[in-house]
Image 1 (cartoon, rainbow, N blue to C red):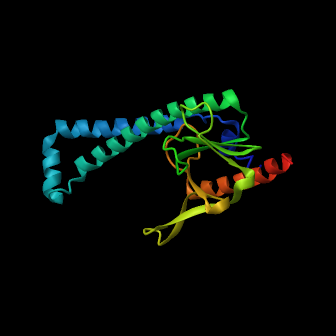
Image 2: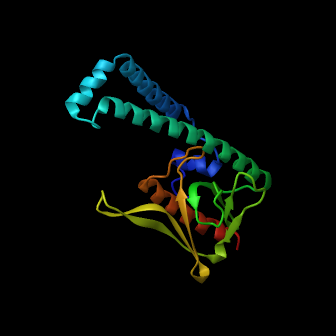
Image 3: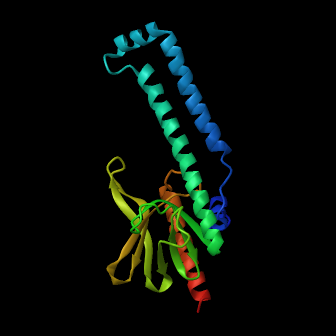
Length: 214
């Protein structure tokens, strides 16, 4: 398997969560700092009034910025907690019935089931899993898989097309788009760089596993 020396790829190979202390620490600092700033502003309203007066109505950054940061911190904290729980349930069901060679967490996939949180890779092909199903909700045999490429979309701020998912082209003009996560237990999507690595990892696994079954 390519990129097996990368730590985050090894976590996906083994189906393990990396240590979350950095993320927890960062979110805690963001939430506490935002809350502290808001508390200071509400206990010193004269500063807020002066800021609005100097920047114009609706442009007072002293209030809007900490509110935004607090909301972002809470959103990521809650979504990461929920995602971690659903991933743990899915992993327990997967390990009870199979031994995958690779785990691919997703934020979304057009697999016909909105609750898919993870795909696995083994000698038979790719399999989609939910946190509640004891068996895969969809399986893609290697024999039906034609290509694994990057799905791209236009990004106006970059002025170019950028990868946002993996595109799995199948026989009979069918396809699957996997919006991947790079980490089990986290809610945020994989970066463009990591999507490219995941594409290469899946291609190498296909060569190894499909050949091993013959």
